[in-house]
Amino acid sequence: MPVQLLPASAAAFAPRASAVNVVLGSRVEPWLTKTLKRINRIRRPLNSVPQHQRYLTEILSSPHAIWTLASLMLPKAPDSELKKDSNPLIEAISNYQLVHLEAYIVHVDMVMQSEVAYKLTPDTIGSLVEYHKDIHCVNAKASSYGWPEKEQQCKKLHEDFIQAVNKFVFRTHVSALEGLEEDGAGELLSGKSEEVKTSVTALIQPLLPPPAKIVDVVRQPPLLPSSPSPNTPIWVAMDEVQIPSPLPAYSKPYSTATYLNAASVVASSRFPRRLLQPLQPVRRAAKRPLLLDGHDGDEQRATSQSHAVALVCYATARALAVGWDPHTVF
Image (cartoon, rainbow, N blue to C red; front, side, top):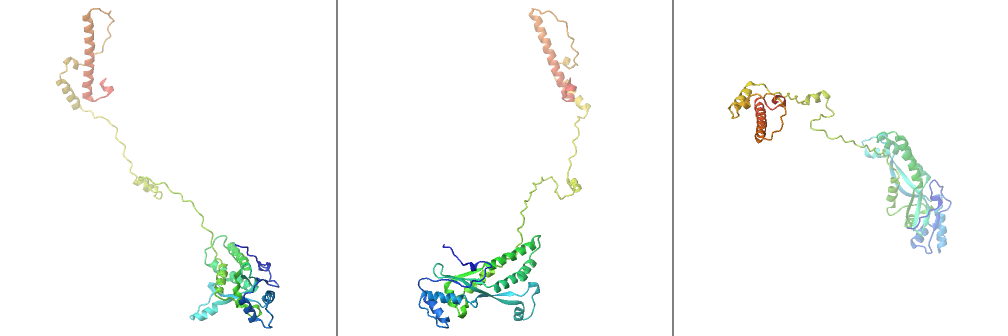
């Protein structure tokens, strides 16, 4: 896309130039010749490209060469001060005003871009700035909630609008020069006014509050089924908690019937009577010399086996009588 160059007079806050920058090609379009002859009072000759360029530059540089690009219907006061009337026509006339968007031509290019550029007049810029400050900003502050930097942001919004409206340049095709009238004035044709309205209205931005701060949500871990709710009072939670009663200490009840039954069971069994007698403390006999006779060895082994069997039977009887307990059996 080629670079679109504009003269210095098209910059923001720049004054209007004494002469309009007009660039024509090597051949003049027939519609341009027809338009210039229509507004030519003194019948100046238009037989060459330089003659067309000089006449067009002269007529567009006139102080009266002011174009009406569009018209906006704007309120005269903030919404809180508008008048109410039963007649809608009277109410509209009392509360609204018609602001004409007037501009002058700063650039005509029929070679590279085939466009014409318009810049708003100081009077139009002043009317829009006044509306933005006294009406738009007041309505914007009234229709939004308050925050600490609200006044500073509204002031910055107005300053940005001043910069934008002074930089505003409307560009359109050179065929718009067909609406040229005497003294260089004119109006846009073929619905170009709607484009101007849309472009100028887009410069009026709303007052937006700052974005909400993102807060990290701390998720509470899930509670156990038996755990009380965090919002439940502690005394209510304690009432709802079921504390299990302590288990009673185990103690086997003493009963003589159990002993008698066990004694009868033992008595009726086939144990030898001598095994049912309480064991006597075993006295350690003096060591005897090892006999080589086989009868003495067999007698010793039989005695040891008898003592072992008696001990097992005694432990079994005691266990059946009073239950298994090392302290009671032995």
